[in-house]
Length: 209
Image (cartoon, rainbow, N blue to C red):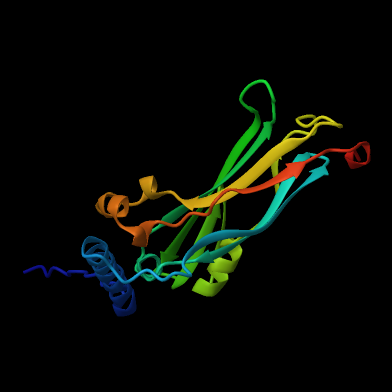
């Protein structure tokens, strides 16, 4: 009688454990969201420490530093595998005494952060570029810095005129997984946004390289 040989494949036990932790993390994060999570402290949120515009060959570039303090619920959600999307918004307006201010420039950039259980690392993505980051503190530091973002062309601002410019960062709760969106609507634990940081830009002839 011919014999039949059966072949069985088995995934790595360590891989199975990582996936199990990831699934358990999602369940725990959802539970925290639905039942209120942890208390929100007074020092949690986003503030703009510094922002500036500089003229370069490819246009006006924005650099900014933010102070980002995650709520315990949000930090736990990231560690448990929930991706978060942060939006940096920039606006420039030309003041008009006879009418509403004219919006001259509007731009925004999105940053996505997530934890990858298979590699046990974090990842931050900006457009098609992404980088792996080992620790949550380093992830937060990278997220809080913007350098050389070309927000508009070289000719958007005229020499001799003044412009009111502003920038802010916020967590985009509309891009949270569906189970978390409902809770985020009513819970301050899922609110993370800065106020607008405003200053006046007055281009001079010397600013033109």
